[in-house]
Image 1 (cartoon, rainbow, N blue to C red):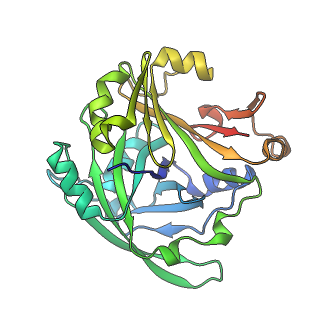
Image 2 (cartoon, rainbow, N blue to C red):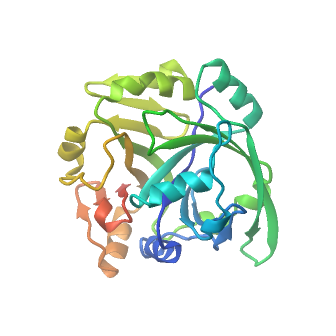
Length: 288
């Protein structure tokens, strides 16, 4: 089955600072929410996908991973012990149990299905329960990158037009950029997460075409050439998420927010780029 991008997990030390930063970029953020296992988040809801700003808030509640149990909290806690940045890529799901069975049949390293509930605050201030079923899939060659499918059980409470409206006119996630020494070595993994015809080898890199957004995996040399990221020393030697790009209807408006708030950036013809050192460890692009 082909699965569109559901959301990105951006793991940071200070959630309030990060949420304020994204508001300076012209985004609307949801109120802070709390997971039962020791992490907190704020969301940036887009048109059918979202960005999850995440931090470890109560380390004592985080449980260790077990052989068949993936620990969301422990993974992100370990990630933060090394750096800030994008730690996870999530795909949409309408049936997490069926996704898990498909992954098992395809030989992916998977874990027990995980269900949880949390409280969400609506724009009118009411607190309501939202619930999710998650199915994690990992590759031992990518210890700093995790993937999972997310099925929502109360989408009527989750998605709200007030949270999806952004002053910078951003609506969609276009691309997620990963970096690896040998991208083609991971074509089989992505073909199992999606479908074989979703994966396209492009020179030294690869692209994974999903129903909502594209994943691109490129070499470190290509990352330097294409994105001007001259210093990769803060990133791991294993494959990692470098950043992501979004579509905006008004690139000039994005530039105004960046200039007004003195956020360092580069501007090209139809593109604005923030480098990881200026954006909590992740490269952020706006495409007009």
